Image: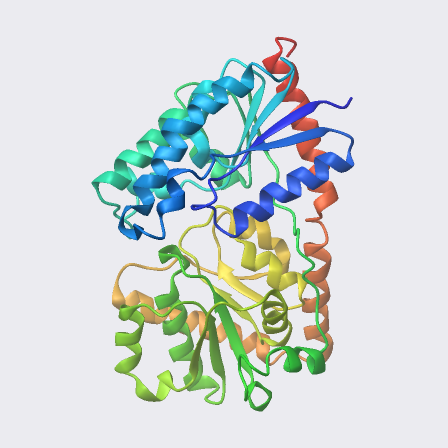
Length: 393
């Protein structure tokens, strides 16, 4: 049965790269299935002055999102069919949920790290007062919803803790690998990386990707420090912005610093090439909503070493290699890094046929995260949410 979908998406000034990609996947997938899809997002009115007043960009955006857009929502709701399904592409759009809570709706949930930080649950992340208030505002909004889709069981468990009452619908649908990640032949990958890393053809490397605090980049460097003692010719490529803390740590280890290369603003082809050439992806994340790099690397035939907690274990399955969670004490961190380095060395020294088995297992595992399978699940739960919202559930 075809139905009408209104997709709420992020304000253009605050949308991260992954969110537009996610919302576009929904639009294209649901349109292919014969549904009518219309996207709603706050107009950029006061935000037009952001370039002239960059210090006020956030607050100008808030005017567009929380003063102007609610008025437009109320107006537009009077002009759409009553059986339309209102879909929120991210729980961070929670402040708009109260305007549609009495109509059929469903909310996609990605991660609650910002909210957990605002509530004091994370020792590594302490947002300011305005950040805490904003996250509570978001929580107040999405808590008035009654139908949800989470990207992992870990995200779903967090969601249920924050909701005041059990939802009428709460399902887990893993993200789809909605970009064409696949192995690139070494010769082609070297050409793609020629400008980014001119001498990449002269060395082997492991890699890491991520800028957020919870990616545990310090842990990556600690692992590499131990690994470099076992394989001194190896390099580390970090697709990341170096922080002052990371620079300071490396400045005390000048020889190690020469083996670490930071890359920023890379193209999709360059990222795909890095995954295809790397000896392994090292991804000891503290927390994740889903863990995209794990899946992307596996889809490119790259071995993955990641943290043995949800959702990394959900995304990596039996195709990834695992280490324990990052310890808090410095002495334990050294032992932890040594263990990780030993696992990586085992991966590097596998016989060629065993390396091929690892690669093929990763490719096979990644193939289960297809866009069509994900969209099939979305369509099923969208229909259920529509029935619940129409009083037929």
